[in-house]
Image 1 (cartoon, helix red, strand yellow):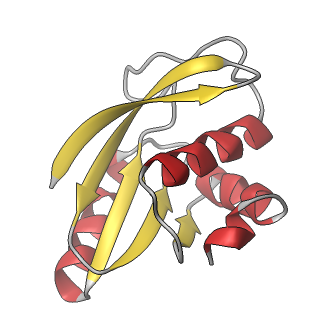
Image 2 (tube, helix red, strand yellow; image 1 turned 30 degrees about the horizontal axis):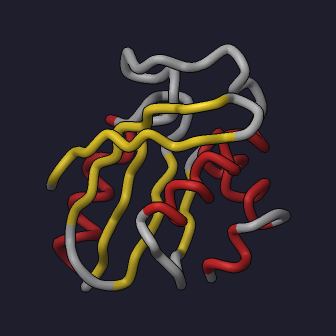
Length: 119
């Protein structure tokens, strides 16, 4: 597993730094954690990436686990836009989006917008 911080640009919030854990190889999965923070999905991400031919990309939502959150980044829709920008920067297509709790809310919001283009 590697952790990389990406600077993503949103029109509503400006530049936003996002820490991303990336593990495994194969079909890409964007795994969005819930309100308990990124540690709540770590074991699942590790298991999934080692059991299947899967690349699991797990960002830490800004404001979680000691990360900064710009004041302007204050809606679920903006978080969905942030992860769309991440997928664009990583040049990924055909991505399966999985979310737990608030991560599920972000995933569903993205489906109503741009994530559909990644399926």
